[in-house]
Image (cartoon, rainbow, N blue to C red):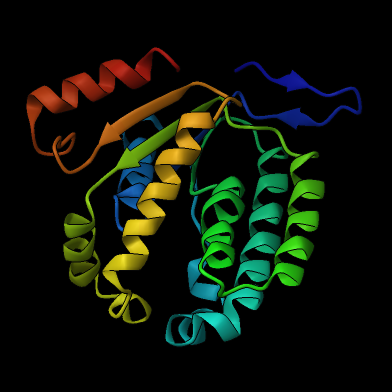
Length: 214
């Protein structure tokens, strides 16, 4: 196996693949599938450790800044750790989404005030300058109706009362973000209309699409 080497001698991953998309679109499922199918090394989103998350879903205005700063710090740590591992890595949600989607939504919806948002952006922009972007971004697309059904099925208590309007606005921010993404190639996959797990034709199409990047 070959490695890219920084001037300081730090080994970089052979490939870094990021899986992006709204809540419940299938990011963790795809990350697990890529791990099992191609032997990639998974990096999962640390949502379970966020001590503000339950409070945030109850009162977004009071806990938006706290919750987003926690995610930003932990996601930055994950990205830094990526550069210390060799192999093909696949990450479930990126630091870019935390800022470009979730924090932006909270600011636009007036749940995060201007002062807190600008402080957050200062931290995000300083961090992102030091990060290696993914070699491939896989963007998963799904309707709000399908997302809500999946959220109910997986049963995370903190997600059960998420408003449909919130998911809809996140979907729009994701579409705007992916349209302007220029840091790497993008593979867009509709997880509602296509089933790479259960449909043979879809599975072959997905394998063909992703294997050219490997």
